[in-house]
Amino acid sequence: MTVPAFHRLLLTGAAGGLGRVLRPRLKAYCAQLRLSDRADLGTAAAGEELCPAVLEDKDAVHALLQDVDAVVHFGGISVEAAWQPILQANIIGLYHLYEAARHQRVRRIVFASSNHVTGFYRQDDVITPQAPPRPDTLYGVSKAFGENLSRMYHDRYGIETVCIRIGSATPAPENRRMLATWLSHDDLERLIVAALTAHYVSHTVMFGLSDNTTRWWDNTSASHIGYRPMDSAEPFRAEIEAREPLADASDPIARYQGGVFVNLGPYDA
Image (cartoon, rainbow, N blue to C red; front, side, top):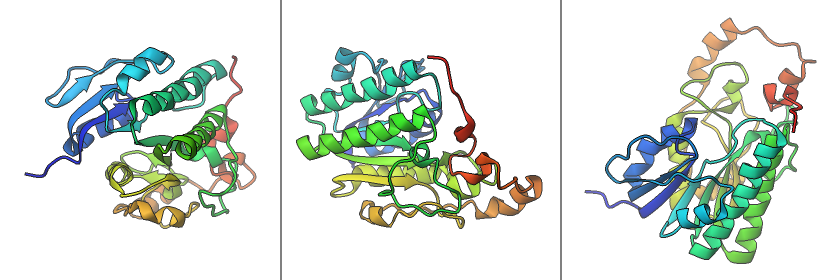
């Protein structure tokens, strides 16, 4: 029998779309999986602990991280929205998470960042994680903040973080853009596990994508994480290209890597 890599892992955002994907998968890597969200988490399975919490609640977040070996942080607002919800969940809530990690001596966090940190790069650009942020939304701004906050907590307090700029994590690619951005659910699991178990990660920013032929993102600088994608969008290319005509290159959605996000909002505060 394989011994789990961790005693207790925390998965935030466990009731969200990707949280529900990761919930049954992460259990294999720990003796106890602590699950948190502000939404209904259902019934605990064997080896699960349900701990509903609101990220804006400092005391609740500090309790949430007690006796945790590592955190997979998928909580917060995951789409473009009005400023106040993003501020509360993605900025104030993330600050509470890192302060709790400091106090509880949690040494590693996997942070679900987003490709929308760099959404205003062109689709004919190939960028590395070191390229300056060009967020396409307030949501993207909040994820850029998270990357910088986590860097400060590494440099000052030694908390290691892998910031994963997730592309399009869906069962299959759905459109031409996703031929470049697709991240299969199996590769998402591989990436999270690599980020959790790599010997030394320091503070690493990397893009979350499968082994796609069309590439906008170069992860060479994050090779020390040991992530090896096994899936590719290529088998879906012919069907997608036959179904979806080429877009007008002057359309911002077709010009920029952020796709439809570059046209979202503004939202009322």
